[in-house]
Amino acid sequence: MFEEPEIQRRLDIVYVDITVLLSRSEDCQQKLEFLKKEVRNPEDPRRTHEESIKLFYETQTVMTKSQRNLAVGEPL
Image (cartoon, rainbow, N blue to C red; front, side, top):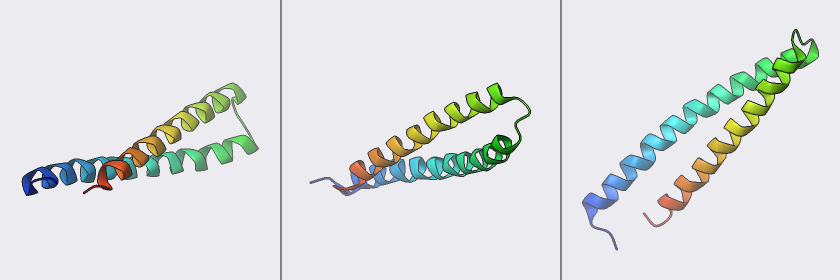
């Protein structure tokens, strides 16, 4: 199906993407923990709301890119 150099190239790309996504996922987790604390006693409710929306979209991006990497990795 694919030549070995092409398979290695694709695997390298997927590996880098997964590494970046893991880092972004950890960042999202930290933001979520911060927002959980903020929701209990918000200093600025509007900012807390805006940050939660940003986190939602960032989480969706991480999930979508993770699914894409799984789809790319399947044939390899």
